[in-house]
Every structure is written in C-alpha cells, then in structure tokens.
Amino acid sequence: MKKRLLMGLAATVVAGAALAQQAAPAPVPGWAVGRPAGSTLAPHAPKLTVTPLADVPVGAIRLPAGFKAEVFAHGMPGARMMAEGPKGTVFAGSRAIGRVYAVTRNPDGTTRTRTIAQGLPQPNGLVMIGDSLYVLAVNRVLRYDNIEANLDNVPPPVDMTAAFALPTEAEHGGNHHWKFASLGPDGRIYTNVGVNCNICDFDRDKFALLVSFNADGSGRRIEARGVRNSVGMAHHPVTGELWATNNGRDWAGNDWPNDTLHRVRRSGEDHGFPYCTGNTPDPQYNKGRSCGDFVAPAALLGPHVAALGMRFYTGSMFPAEYRNQIFLARRGSWNRERLTGFDIVVAHLDAQGNVARLEEFMTGLRDDANQRFVDRPVDLHVLRDGSMLVAGEQMGVIYRITYQR
Image (cartoon, rainbow, N blue to C red; front, side, top):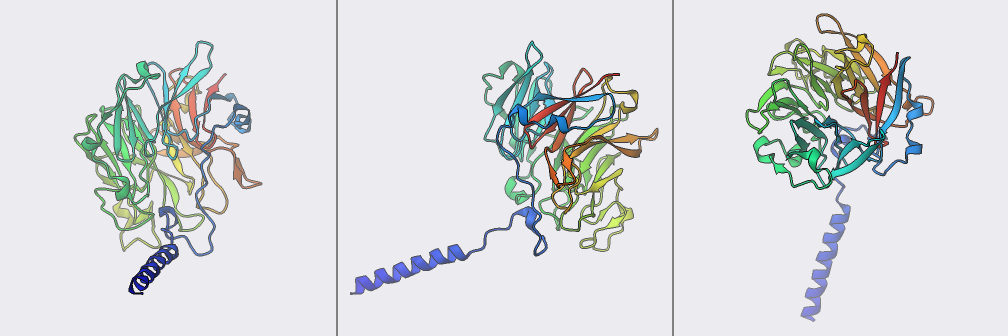
C-alpha cells in the first residue's frame, strides 16, 4: 500500500512537471521584442531550396538605358555576401543555410557552382587576402589557404576564432550577429559587430561597432561606435575613407527611422545609436542626449529598407558618371506595412565627397500592386571586366549587370 502511494505521488509530480513545461511560454525571438499587440509584421522567410533557372526572375529587372541583366550563376540557396579570388573565383556566403559557395567560369563562358563549406553558423562575411579566403561566421573566423587550388578537395581551415575574439552568438542573444567583411587599403580586415538587441542599454565598446583587425586577428581597433547593424562597408578608392550602411531599429513606426549611410573620417567616431538617428532623437530611447554630439549620417536611405552590401564602382565598363560612386543593395523591408527597398540605388558624391543625391538603379523585384517581391538583392561586387555582380538571396542566384554604349 505504501509503495503504491509513493508511486502515485511520483507519477503526480512527473505529470505536474510535464504540465508546467507545456504551460511555459515559448521564448520571444529577438526580432519580436517590442512588437505592438496585434501586429502581424515578421521577417520574410528565406527560401532555402534551389530555384530552377527558368524560375529566376531576371526578366523582371529594370535598369537604366544601356544596361543589361543576366544570370551569372544560380543554384545557391541563400547566397549573400561575395568576395573574389585572384584567379577569378567568386565566393558567396550565406546565413540560415550555413554554406559557402564558389563559382568558377567554364571555358564556354558558363559557370560552375560548388559548395566548399557547410554546417557553419551564418557564414555571411567573406574577405580575400592574397590566396586565402577568410570566412566570418558569427564569432568564428576560419582561414582557407590556397583555396582556389583546392575547390574540389577543400582542406580543413585554420581556425582563428580565438585571435579575433568576436562576441559569441550567446552574447548577441540571437540579435544581429552575422558579419560583413572588407579588406582595407591598410591591409586590415574591417567588420561589424551588431547590437545585441533591437534597442537597449549595451556595452558601447563591445556592440554596435565597426571594428578592424590585423590579418592575424591582433590589433583590434574601434572604427566607429553607435552604428546599430552594418552589413556592408567599403573604403573610398581615392580618399581611403571608410563608408558603411546601417539598419535602423524596429517597432518605431512605418516611416521611422531611416536606414543610413555612414562616412567614417576618424577612427573611434560615435554615430549616435541608440540615442539618435541623424538629427532626430529616438522617441523612446534618447535619454536626454543631444544629437549634435554625434556624427550625422552621410545619407538617409529610407525607412526599414534593409540597406546591406555596398561597393564603390571602380570599373571602366559603366558610364563615367558612375566611377567611384556608391552602389548599395536595399534587401527590402519587413518592419513596415507597405514594402520598400528590394532594389539597388546609387549614392552620387560631390567634389567634397558628400552625398549629393540617391538614384534608383536596379528595380523591378518589388511588386507594389500586390505587395510582394520576387527576389532580395543583398550584395554587389565589381568584376575585373567592369561588370557588376548582384547576389539575390531569395532566389539563390547571382546576377551580372553589363553596359553597352
């Protein structure tokens, strides 16, 4: 009798624990923190399967007169940030699918795509230094030496994670932990460390930064503070100044804040997040700070457009007015009731290096009438022949833009 009673009590405890587990609310994902009651806005689900070539929406793309879009490579689900090796191999990182791709040209002009790494945590950031490909996957930094000679049998990479000591995914709390990477004219690797929240108090020497390192991971230097989530940066080919895109906070309305373009003239500048966007105080998080205390953005890029990869055009194929101007990919909004972005724009600079105007360049991927999109441009790369590549994440494709007079 006593044994049966104890067994019954044990069963009750186990059942109660199971019910408690079932009743526990699911954790709120980082992007949803602060979402107003009743809102149905949420990030667009990525497409992580191969898109057949016939379904790639290259015919929807609209460009200025004289420009043409074609498919350079496809079959790369989630393809994002690009880098080019000295032998012409184009590498593309990804996020959710965890792969790194390599695209080579065949003798007949077609391309071949390989997966050279997989199972990585959001290997979004790529940069080539000599014959070595650096892959930045959240906090992991992996160096693939002599990579172009080993595309069919990739050796284990050199793990440089400890040397770079970037914040881990756990430290980011699931927020803005993917990386962009760029090689500076000084030979240093430049990257971003996004903020570990939507908007909050945070360590301003650890998050919401642009940072640079020596190629061996030493010599960490803060290039800019108060840059919430930059996933695109490049140095001006003449002045050497660092420029970067930035994604503004969510849940502050359809039309505020703008995403921004930043010009960094001196290492260590403070660009104002979370207190200000440009000259506008954050309505919930200003804390009495004067926006005049911070470096203002070089340009406002539109609310919630998700400005990502950016490159200076350094080729000679395009008309002269595009030379040394900034092409940037606006991946497209989710935190807005009517879609915006899903395009490429050009920031034209004046003689003093200031942004004089923004010009639409590649459009057609956003269907305003039906409030849907057919692809999401995320990065650009200028090839040696002067043509420009555009990575379309949703279709897993790389487009090539050419110009003929």
